[in-house]
Length: 148
Image (cartoon, rainbow, N blue to C red):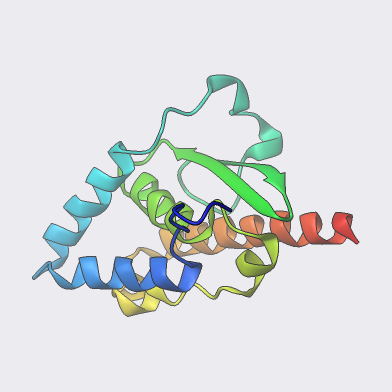
């Protein structure tokens, strides 16, 4: 790596940044709006990747999660048909995408509890978020296993 290249923040730092951002908002109406805005900033998702292979089950809304890269640096693309779920995806990708698979597997999603999402998501959205995180970590674990 070149000396002047700035390394991206660690998964831990990304979580802390999210916690700090959400601390600015006084109530959950503002936090939901921020989540929706984050979801709108997701990069376009290729229609041809919206297949059953990449679909995350356990979510009330439709969610697709596509891994790429290798154990050294995994990248994820994801999208949803729900505005709030798209915002959740944006947060998850900030913490977990473009990281080594070992860091992805090791990083616990503490930001979910810390910003109050655990209390403010419906049970179906919480289940969907848990399913998405489980799928993402499974992709990372498989990538690590393939490397050995």
